[in-house]
Image (cartoon, rainbow over all chains, first blue to last red; front, side):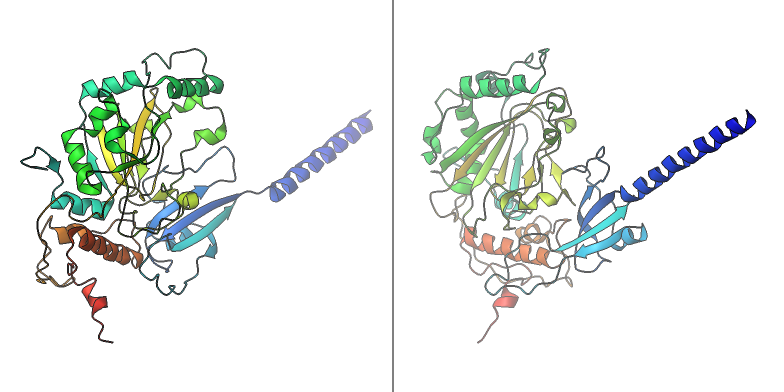
Length: 116
Length: 318
């Protein structure tokens, strides 16, 4: 009888361990990406934040236009200090002849991510 | 605001410079309550319209369509002269003939502007929307495709017949963005821009925007309907000295950049050089150049400058 109980206990532990491992693997596979987009006042990461957007991997959280009048960081580098990983920034492009004084889109765009 | 002999109110030089610099002028509570009520009655607004038990989206669309069908807002053909757009006794006719507003319209686009289009924006409380996409605020955009005009501009009157409170998601707009040549919703990625503003105003407020200003609607988190009536006007003449007969002549008595005794407060030159919190260090300077260029055009003063921003790059002997 005791052997039978021990066997059931061992089997239960094995099954539990199996599902726990599945959960761990799923967590690793299903990790989600949060995105932070910053627009800076010049091409240096040290410069001031003039525009921003947040997007969340968790679909219960929504980043939307006009959701905050204060920037998340004063300067771009502060995002790095806070654990955001930079994965893209805009290039510096030569001004097209005849169009040197026309202004348009925000020039200094930086994309960051956090994997959670 | 100047009152002329012929009883027309025209904008002042400083108001014109503010418009050139920021891209908008706000006239708080300019339309009296009688006209606001008349407008609401003409569009079929009732204070109980949101008390219906049926809050599904079908009812909401039905309600909107009903207002479009039964309201007294006329169907006006594009290009109709503003003077012929609205019936004499209508609330909208009262709005555009408000002495201060008609003076501002005349100052900016002349006395024979044409109506491009008009539209009644109705924003229901967010709880009435079930589709997740409709619970998200509108992205920043300008109201045009790529518009190559550098000197000519249209104006858009935004008339708010009821008070817009903070939680009603009034239009978000970016001061000074009107020189930026972009293509409509292409800028929707810019969720927030430092210095952005949100319309919060008393009933009867009218804001006149440059057609190219960046803006977007917010979410209405109140229990009330938010209305905004937009009228887009285009000029039929050169926009040169429409508000004044004064001769402008730059005296070249320029304060130098930075090392000076301070630019005269509220002077045209100070208004045109005031940077916005979101201006990039480099492109922001180009925006100042573009303001000065537009000021030269509307004053017909080809030599006007502020702190040599343009003179410096025009000093070319080759």
